[in-house]
Length: 412
Image: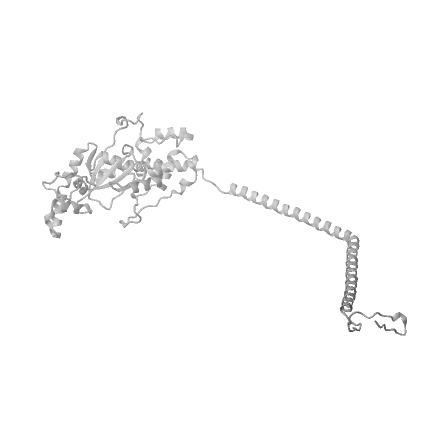
């Protein structure tokens, strides 16, 4: 292989494999020798590059380590300053919170001193009951809704302010006696309504339902006719007349069962008045007409004459009910009005009424020891026994459950 010699020996260079003139190979062995020579030169070059890279990296690492040693004190000082600032900020924050709490407590104390809270529970029991009477007793009947909203005659009615019962348990217990015991509840038709009764009982609860004392209801005269079996009240009965009627006669047994579904005991009521719906004012009247006078056809005039004739003897039907049931008596609304805790005129004035006469406590059977129904339950006023005794001595027994009489007396 020829070698190039420069004038200066220091500039001696061995030609690289890339710049080295390539001789024509004479044989396969020459080719292999040339390839091995090129491979060795490339390997030496790569080794030198890697060595140089490692040296550069170590130099950089050494510089970083030297820099950290030199600037470590500066970094530590900065961290200490920042920690001190954080501690001071926390102290200032707690001072602000403390000042805010002290200001709130001071404002609350001033508020308690400035506001004049009326000591309602410190009032005598009879005065609290009069306040409950004013807030929780309406001047009209309370109609129990069923099957959603219904179209009824709109009547002016004073609102009930039941929020006082949510102030404390004592006000809730005392208010419930007045709310349920002095309002007039209208149960509408006396007939079998299991779903309706369960709904009402679940809404107000059996305890509150047992406090109800004034109840009115209505009973269509046509129900009494339809409750009779075949052969009663008419010489001929059509074949479609029910062998087991769906309509019940107005009996004490049926009324007891009806009101027990609402957790209401007849003998605990101070008033149970039933208005008799005349013939022609309900759908059941048409069933009676088809059964007793099927030959009238579609003549409206004939139907009206039939209804009029039935209503003319309506008193006989009512007297028959009262004769059959010993504790029912026929009355008028004027007598019922004297027993209500407020003045009320119904929109269906002019009807005939039946009133239930409750049994005296000593006449009840299976009730255990007889208890007076005209005294407030002792559990309500246990913490004010002295006040309760004063009320029982100062108020008439009848007015203790019905404060409406006392209100009327004060107004007159």
